[in-house]
Amino acid sequence: MKLYKLTPGNALSIMALILTICVILCVVLVVGMENIILGFVLPFAVLIFFSAILLFYILLVDRMELKNLPKQKEWVKVVDKRQELFCGDEVAHTERYITFEFRDGSRKEIRIGSRSAFNLVIVNDTGIFTYKERENKMTFIGFEKDQPV
Image (cartoon, rainbow, N blue to C red; front, side, top):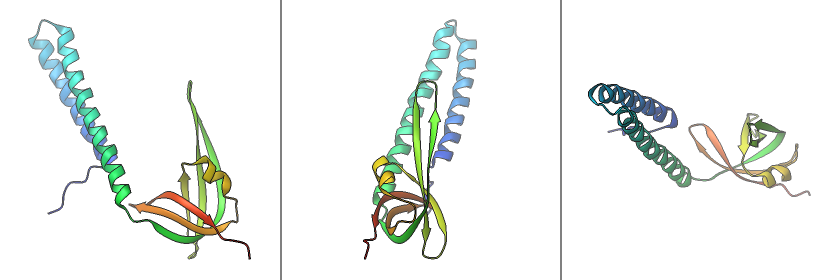
């Protein structure tokens, strides 16, 4: 028996379904109630409550799955680095990426969460790349440079 796997994409579909149900509840309650505020507040409170539970579950399951995955190590060469700046109204954040080339010649761009790890790696460095992989998505754990001979 295969269990249903909850992913962020599936979660959005579930949230859309919950929203639809809440809108229907609003219509039914508003038609049947004299208090319009209660007719709108109650369904949206239910929506927020269940969405928060669903979001918490997704984040918890995601972290537990990643924690239980085995660490993998491969020799790689750093072929590119880049940073992308995202600016909002009051907040800006930077995402950092390193492109690694594996022994078989394939390349993979990995998002690096740590600024210090990103700054220590230089293009053309070689070494051991430690990562966890899930559904063809690699999560950066570390990079240990080869020692010069």
